[in-house]
Image (cartoon, rainbow, N blue to C red; front, side, top):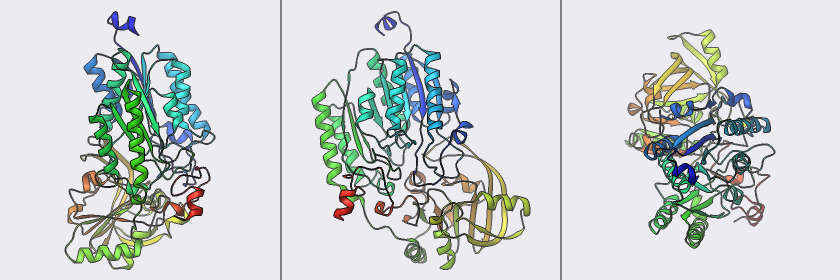
Length: 505
């Protein structure tokens, strides 16, 4: 490395990404075929990254500033699944990681490797997937710096800390800082290669898992955690990272984790990591609060609307597949008017409409409730078919600004009295209003907007709606984690481990 720098040869840094947030409670395995059509290879990953904020775009900014050469290997993560998908097959994992390894072998040598991972991947037969990815990469590239970026919802433990030189994690939920974290990681990489930085990393595992709906970083309790991270950074820590964890993967490293990176200061790293971990544990009872169920929640929303609070956005946060009908059913039963359902995932209903109806027709059709019993029974709706076809639009909100969205088949049904239902092929959680406007719907004029999302939507929608109102429908991503059946989590993880379940605290 020194000779390359002395000779003025640009640093060569490999870049790869393999990410997936796996909901193991979804009974659909994630296969290679579900990934393959969305894999981007070679330096094409950089063109792909230019279109919206992401880690790799952050890597690119630093490389341009520092005169480093980035070598694209592979980006994999998007799938053809209807919504969240379940366990990744070992075949899919091995094939994609194998492609990364082949790319490293064929394109080396390198001075360092930047890996944009997720952290909540769950793979059949691989207990710690991200650590295993780094371990296999290490086996190819040897003792050069390997640095990792992770999503805030990562489930990790000491194994990743032992094989990676540094780990950097998002600090915002909604996730609006991926490019910033990419910059932090890439700067650390360049300085390390040049001998200007000696990464020392401390790790802690607070033994706590929380539902995603409680993890918003702009309000307590999570805001307190990230404020503490920034306090330590003001004291000399290079980067203090916390993964809040992902509760819907039944894996042994489930739950929150703390990674603290300093420039050669082991004592500072350890003190910061312990302090942040202690704070997280002290807040454990703050991560649970009652969230209304569909009947009471819809009734309260209708009272709010009647009092002049509008529009109200209902966040049906627990639906991980997209076919849940609980809120739609209650809106109909309770006589709601002037609402829009941002999407019910039902590819079979869409196919029926495409083959049997045209725009302007009056249709009667049952939608939703097809993928899993917990989603609820199908709901019959009737009305005018306002639209059926493909959609193209560009996101303008903080989540994915500039990203071009293509939906190959969408339908809009006008049920009368201002009631609109969008039917989609897969889970649809619009991050801004463009997915509505493309269908001729102005959501600001609705009394009620229903989205199947937890926190991300708020980056845009909080500036549009009068109130964000989560409803805890039956689903595979519930607020009450004790309603899920876990088999692989440690006994001492609060509140789902055997120790805590038996204690009933």
